Amino acid sequence: MASSDEMLHAAIRSGKFDEVQKLIDSGINLNHVYGMRGTALCAGIESRNIQMVKLLLKTGSDVNAQDWDGEPPLILALRKNCLDIARVLINHKKIAIDKVDPLTKKTALHFATENMMVDVVKWLITGGCDLNKADIESNIALHLAVSARFHDIVDILVSQKNCLIKFYNRAGMVPLHIACKSDDVQSVKLILGVIKERAKKKSNTDDLGELLMNENYLSVNVNSETIYEKDSCLHLAARNGNKEVLKLLISHGAKVNAKNNLGQTPILLACCLQSVSNSMKSSNHDNSVPEILLKAGADPNVRSHMRNWKPGPKNVEITPLVMSCICNNVELCRSLIKYGANINLCDSTGQSPLFTALDNNARQIAWYFLNEVSEINVNLQNHLGMTCLHAVLKCFNEKDLNEVYELTKAIFKHGGVLSPDKKGETPFVAALDYENAGVLQAILEETDINLRDFKINDQAGSSLLHVSARMGLIEISRILLAHGADIDALTHETGHTPLFEALHNDQTEMVEFLIQNGCDLSLDSSVWEDGESDNSEEEETSLDINDELLNFVHEESCCPKSLYLLTMISIRTHFHSNNLCFKHIDVLPVPEKLKRNLRYR
View (tube, one colour):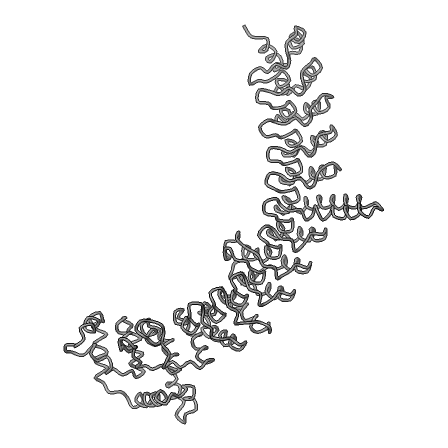
């Protein structure tokens, strides 16, 4: 036999008013939770029968009695989209309008807001609901409306004088933060409009102390910070690059130089944005966001961390100008300089904007600094002791090999000094490591380095020409010879020539180059001539040399040098013997072709 509860629920579902009334008259408990079916009122809501719901409420059903999992009848009605029933419940004199769902801690207002039930929101407000009750994530209805971009509901909520504008959720954000972060211009307008209006109303007083306090109302709300990152609304808008939101915030008193927990200001985030939204190689940067901030008084010389920016240096404090160099954005550099950026303000590792531009191969920016910014200091050293002459080594331009040469010359024009880094390595020696012929040539032209006496710090006491021959760097070898390097120089320890180094490292083209330019083949003859060597170590070394290459050198050693080549050798020997500068070859009374060949042009 069916229980009375089962009969009641069956009658409610079937809409049998007489049976329901009969059971009520018999004294049945309408508020008993019948398993997962809940109370009688829950059954009435489930059946979507408004008249049945009215009967149950009239005859003793508790309007707030929860079902088996604790859900209040009002939220059940909203969840079932029974809005007519929900209105009846809202208007009931005993309704606990703010009763929450035990799992989500959401009220009916939260549910109606999330589901864009505009009319229900109005009914709830009229019914006296708490606009500032928070759910399990500490979101109030305004958080939810802004997150969903339900602007009609946002407008309704903020128009209520008791709706809190500055209420933090568990994520540490107020509704205005969410609107700025999601580029929701309409919500930003609505919230800022209400903040401004409230501040205006509060300022209608003759009390000076109250006036000052009310004046701060606008600033406190507009400049509210997120709890964890300490980002202001302007930080969030700058990070996204929303120009309209930025202008709205600034016009309402947002502080353009506010700092977050990393010390970042909005201008730095706006400069960072350019690298994310544009290709590093692109010249079509949209700099309108940084321009807005600069015009509003943003300080271009604030230095801070960019730990959360992947392309940039980690745990390094940088300036907006350094950031724009990393992003290869020359127009942004111009704007920053125009608004007072310090061209010599380095990052926390000591790298200047020019160093950064060169280090990132941003040649256009480097040219702008060198040609148009007169107060630039090219000798600033970073934490490794490197200067711009070290940084220019990383500049390469395959289409114009002469550009890096001109850049280096320009650095010297600004007073560049050939300083060693903390390892003792000068840009001159480093140029060989980078195989940067342009920098090497410019340094030799701008300094008085004596290549005949210059040795690098290796165990053999090699010259730069030995190293260049070993690596097969013909263009660099040509430059070294043109500035006085001895083609037949011997290493201090092993007595090897550049030709030997080229042979030993199987650099065929380099071997041919050295022979064509008159190297003394007799100095290494034991390597390719027949017969036993007295030096077993040399014999062992010679076994590693390509036989075909050895035969070529042997054949060349048997051929007499041309008169033209002998003339070249004699003139170069004269300059070497008398320690004369090879630049003076250009004034010799000899044919131009010979001059060019003597200088390896």
